[in-house]
Length: 376
Image (cartoon, rainbow, N blue to C red; front, side):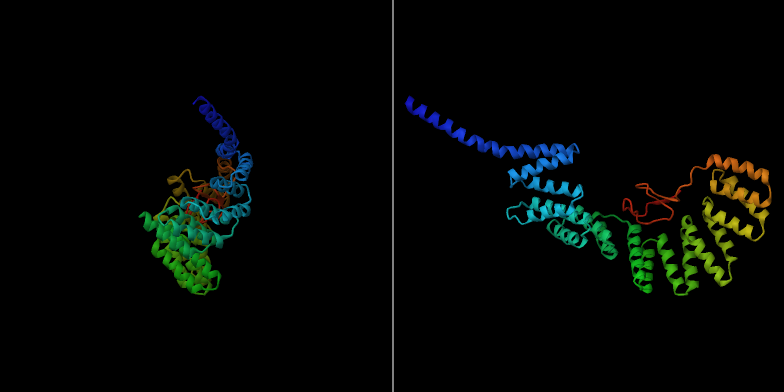
């Protein structure tokens, strides 16, 4: 009995020694992978990359390691290499569904980063079909159509997302219509472009670029009266942005010999939105050009009394004083203005990321948000 027990114990011991290297070999890649994950969490991507390379060499079944390896390649500027890794994973027949979905999502990002948009969209379509309830997949597909500038498809998908989430963002949908209309105009289809601009205004009556582009389209076809009506509608409906139509209106009215109508347009905007300096300054300049310098000065002083912190109005006052020959008063005001005015900046800032531009943009090139630009 004792000899049998000793024999059995020796067998187990020898067996354990034979299996021990194998167990260590199997456990090592997992420890490498966990080490790589910790390095990623610490932002040490290059070190994590080396650990992941060793992991997949030792453990070819470690799908998460392959996925993360591809992701690091993409994030460090090698999206094509990342896509190759993720495509090869999809060939495997033993993938779990959640693994396949994760790989597809990474593959979409690989293609998106490398600007291979058709492949990105094709892959994203597969992704949304496999997991129809995941709203993030739909948003990813929407971002791809935006990047491709396929505004009609972007409109369709955003509309679907809105229904799914039970939300409304008519302003952004209207901007899609504007962008689609601009594309039509660029391709020579003025009428189709105007249809899109009109649809944009139906979605959002305050859609500024729709009015501007709609009027511009009429102007190109010589339909000046239609253009004037469209731009006047903008000044009435959205006086905050009326200044964008002023030059267009002045040029058209000058061509028609009706430049004097600008006075009434300025007055209407001032009445609707008196705190907006643009219309007041344009009106003052009109009075000055007509030789009504005293009236211009009186009106300027009235506006400054209401809005004493308005630097543009103060600058206008300074210019009027110079025109009148009040050198001392102009000099005193000029010194005060110099102490107030910092280095001139751009006129518009994105409220989301701070991107600066001298012209209002409706789609920020920095953060890709919509309708975020505010006038300084």
